[in-house]
Image 1 (tube, one colour):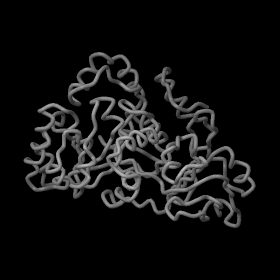
Image 2: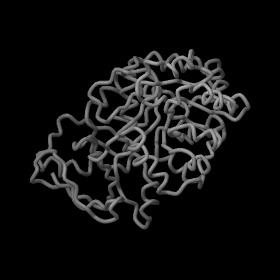
Image 3: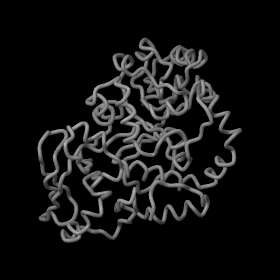
Image 4: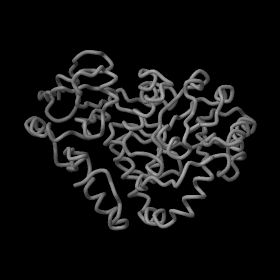
Length: 365
């Protein structure tokens, strides 16, 4: 199948895209659309995306936040955790797909995930944090640890204990294992040199701590990736995160885009060469302005692994005429815009609400 008339953000021209879906002699024509690679979200917690934002003030550090919400928000926490983890994780995957994300790095315990419409990377060497991970020194220096980087929340705060924990982690990395830090609000340039990469999550940082990492300085010492974190501390919409990051003026537009595409390829070994997102292009905007003005409702099509995983209702007729197999797609609405997604998302939502009737999801059926 040939996808025609989408302006390529990378090639800076109108191009055609060939995919192995449906009738290979058929074509789909777009209007006022542009394409870009599938995005890589380098930090999420799939099983925490049914939570609303939980926070009652600005905190000095992540431990203070955790203690506070478990005291003041215990009822809502218990309601969400009553939903089986498999259902919570599946919604976390769809949250990413609806945003145009085709690869996600999940941080936490290994989850049983089957038939995912996007690529899931579950890290084997996971440390939650210096202050909350039991026996983290032994785990970091274990002779039987997997041959891949250790991924750890680090420097998530503004007080002295949080600043010191960065040095503590570096000091106890006795075998100089590769480490990928998350957040790094308290991290300094010299410390950043000890990390293979740092994952920037500005939306979460500002909501919880009121400050984010000094990415303009840290980018000189390590590779910067971009992460959303989960909805317990952030907006579900990654495009809101990216606009917030852009407003900080600590990186160029190209650097921000690289955090979602080429940088993850280098650090995680991801391969999104066959992943493409096609979206509505707002007229009168430059390439990057048009990109960062997007929202999930503007996504027209998501292609992962050479196959269509999401498409807008406006394309339904063309796909049907092209003998595209539509039976495995379900219909949902995002801000009153109809989208078809692979799998039974309405059924998933129904199952979630059996356990958590108050679940307030950003899609409706």
